[in-house]
Amino acid sequence: MNPSAPRFLQTFNNHDQDRLGFALLLALALHVIVLFGVGFTVDRPPQVAPSLEVTLAVTAAERAPENADFLAQSNQLGGGDQPDPSELSQVQVADFTETRVQEAQPVVESPAPPTPEDGTGPAPITALAPSSTTAAPVPPDTDVTDAAEPQPPPQVSEEIASLRAKLGRLRNAYSHLPNVLRITAVSTRADQAASYLDDWETVVEAVGNEHYPEEARRDRIFGNLRLAVRLRPDGTVDDVEILASSGQRVLDLAAIRTIRLAAPFKPFPAELREWDRMEIIRTWQFMPGNRLQTSGVE
Image (cartoon, rainbow, N blue to C red; front, side, top):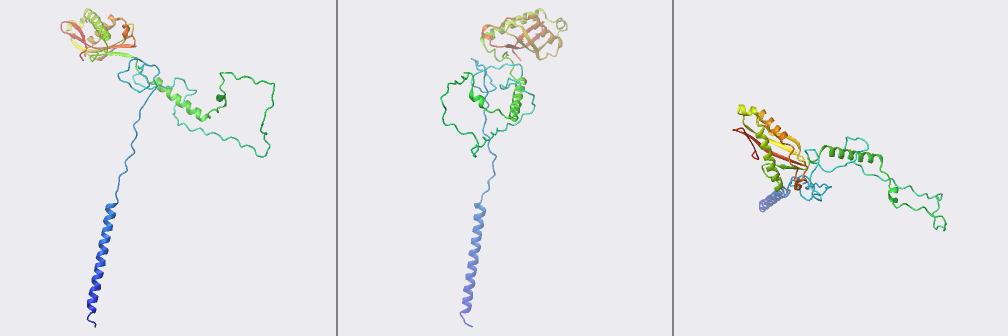
């Protein structure tokens, strides 16, 4: 046997081990690159762009409202007789009642009829001979383009009527309260309102003490109640509401009776005539000594 053969076999085995180690190292490096090179991201939901609701003011007002419910092109004070605010809607009544609001479909215009190519159609006119006949003048109020406009198909008409019906119901169901000047303990809103409130309290307390309830005087019944009195511009009483009862029916009825006896009050001064109503919210105190006093303390 050749003595150099074992050395050759040993060298061949060493080369095989080196190639195997290099292959394993290369495979490991590729796995690391794949694992750390590929990233995973979580899809985020699309962000909704902020919206801004704008309505149309019909009657502009010189004074801006303190708490506006909508944005418009000019200032406008609320009106109506409903407690919830609502935007302006359609005032016309729909042709028929529709309770469902349907989605409007685009109008598909029918294609123009094809021009006959067999020569049987009317020949085009290239020139007009002069004629003594004069065409009838078109009235100035007539719009030629309106007469040529196609009418919407019945489906679109039903959808328009459906939208009008919805807008009409919204307008009838929701609107602002009347333009009310509310006077509470926080603020009297204007100098004229403060002067009017002082005169009103003087009259109410004088009438209330003059007609102090006999039952409360006899049984020594005392207590406080919160009363809201709504006045019309002519000084007459529109409504009386007990916001917080005293717990004594005799005192609650005495306060309402005092308002009825003291009415009507002075009409609103000229500076306050812009208000449809004035609401005076005061605390009525039936105090020891059989004395009535009103104040803005809640």
